[in-house]
Length: 396
Image (cartoon, rainbow, N blue to C red; front, top):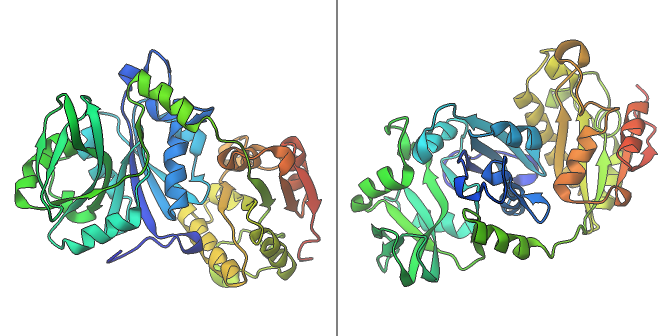
């Protein structure tokens, strides 16, 4: 990627916007009362399936552009999913797809940002899309395209031999054609001068296509759009064969991974505990295990530092751990304190953080372990049904 990149944990650099604000009217008969991206597919919200693709491809930061029933999305994912940091760009009034993307891009710092639809799963090669956009210096957007046969739900793309898109055709019965797969890589400055409310596809794409700034990347990976009941049913079958095969090692942070200095948020004050680093290394070397950190961060509630300060520290810690051969796959935090923000379900000794991590990795509690230095860690682990191992701590 060219230009500025988002520096996430463990070498992650990519950013994405997921459009998740639609009403899902056609899906309401089979998933009533649920916003479309959260419709369950093989017992997991469909949006998790989309995020799984991004997590596997090393994305660091995702902005979910939500609207309708957004509380369902935000209460489920909160601030993280596996190794991805999550922020929200919410709309009170419909902004259409272009307006939603433009608003969400204000949360991004990468020069190019991926855009995905929250109701579509398309297994694309993100690196190839980056390469295609880089090869067309005039292009403002790379559209992932999918070749399909016998369809009438989608419009088609007219693509030149050099990959530039020269036109869009309306929906019509088609024996074979190339469709817009709903995954885009867009240069962040491309929409700066656009209005606050507009359609990315109907307004912007149709207007700029004649300028030769749209390029396609034809992907042959799996594709499914759950916008209609019959394809939603097909998604259940497509993902139904999965089983929980991941075991999860959970670690408290302060006093377990690093010396507890009290409300740590500055990188220069972070000192790792060698014994725990060695333990994480052992888990990292076993492909059946994932490692997650679950930490209370009351300093956020107290106003001592912010979420971005804490995330920056976690990126620094992840880099230091990686240099020692230790991998942390995800960082989960509770930003609350009962005296400042009221009671919550995620602050240890409550088991919320641990359950969040187990759910994201689709692990079984009986296949997980927890390491910590306090009674709160032990109680949280026991409440979540996870085996607990005490660590001595740093002694300070």
